[in-house]
Image (tube, rainbow, N blue to C red; front, top):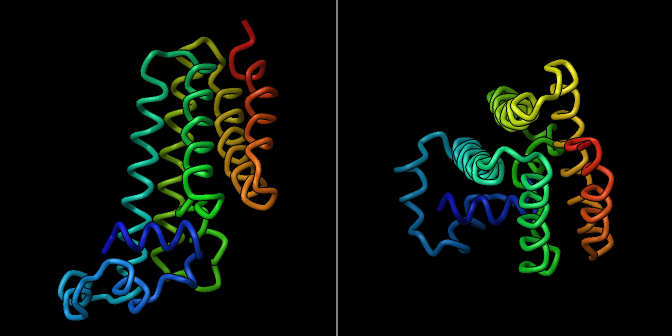
Length: 179
């Protein structure tokens, strides 16, 4: 059910994640939703976003494992390009999907979203500091990187083309790894 909820978030946004849609997508029996998620739809969505945030965080960890900001960005951009191509530009970031549907967020959503985005930024910031970037600049660049990648994914979906991610990669290469 969580995997189905993540898929629906990626393709339809938070408004498209209903109990009925998750059940149809997953094939799970109706009673299992309320057994595993007694908080209903809100709990299901928050759990799905938490899972997606961890997954993307792990992808970032893999991308930054060798310590090169340039290679990390290349690997992260490649992940998003493959995701977009594999889903015919239907799937975006499930975390962003909840963030933009803020009018429907449960009160706990804002805290979860802050934690997820902060964890991604911290990973990038630590990579940059490890590569010799001053801490204050690394913090700003980590914010800029997440904002640029998330925005580029949205533009890729709109244009049905991975060009915006290529543009981010080209311009950020010198920002993140000026050597």
